[in-house]
Length: 418
Ligand code: PLP
Image 1 (cartoon, rainbow, N blue to C red):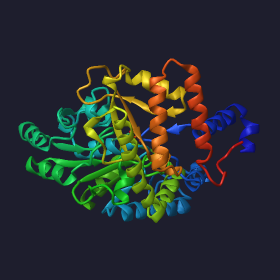
Image 2 (tube, rainbow, N blue to C red; image 1 turned 180 degrees about the horizontal axis):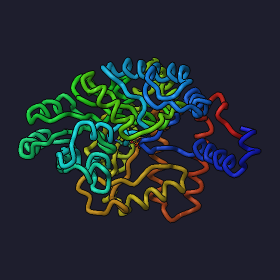
Image 3 (cartoon, protein in one colour; image 1 turned 30 degrees about the vertical axis):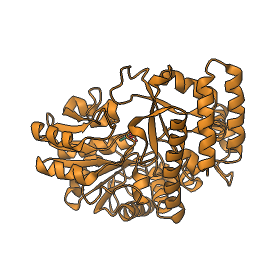
Image 4 (cartoon, protein in one colour; image 1 turned 90 degrees about the horizontal axis):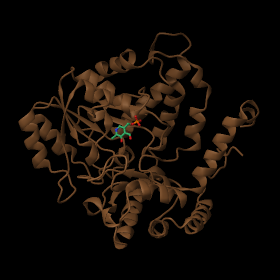
């Protein structure tokens, strides 16, 4: 990155320092991951220069032959790894994937039945300050207060009572497996369309370690940068009968020129997702998440729903006399990065909730396994017990950095900028 260093030393320094931060910290934000060097090389390529409004073979500009190759490969690979009838690889993000599905399948005033935000749902599923909540009526389902699992009988009863136009399955903070077949059954019973938003769990689905929504859902949306380990972006899969409507609602509906460099990088990520190495990493992610949750449970942390089936879990800190925000800030001082999170039936506010969320995709990608999960649980516990003791937190931070140095995030160093 010498050219960047000479042209813009300030941005070079920010990137260089961000790399050092990523390398030296333990990353437990459940929605993050480290994409491969190959993905970054495609994303940092000349394809960023090309305008390509339209779709392969049907562009509004000349000179699209080479970017067409990249987009066709991305589409074919997405359809292949998910077994889908149609793929649109152009959404700039998971949110825009959801926007295109909602615009294509609903009219303003229609009803969406989706998960309560404080129970793990997402902003684009009907939150009042999001476009989805401004245009459509949101009806919510949640988890049982007793078990922390989605109560499908209650979901069916709500659906029957309210007659939604669209049922959404998918969450940002639900630690249990989603029963897509059950969602489909309920949507069919009330004549609603069914959207599965697999933003968080797409990698697990490709690896075959989570139930697959593709046979059941009218639409499947995802972001490409979480467990799927691609560049930051979005993807829509749908039944063939919705293909042309979805394509039209992405372009010209809500987007202009597609990000061809990102689409090239998505193609690379979809190729990587077909490998045995990818499958093994997803399996290890599940093992690591279970191990980390169990270790913390043994230290008297309350795990929401009692455990986890996927790549993340939530801790209810209400028995520890510490808020989610204080925990997040304390752990950052100890070199451990995660986020505060509402827990179902939280008595506190979204800004300072009772919980924290943690996930293991990033630490698993860098090669950590069960013994490291024990070590991380010990550090989390001693940092939270030692909050306010900056010396102690600094000592943990040094130990964290030492462990991290033995698990470089980019083995070949080609992504290193200094
Ligand atoms: N859907 C779910 C369930 C998510 O968790 C997220 C992001 O966290 C999104 C959609 C939106 O993805 P993006 O951040 O790419 O817009």
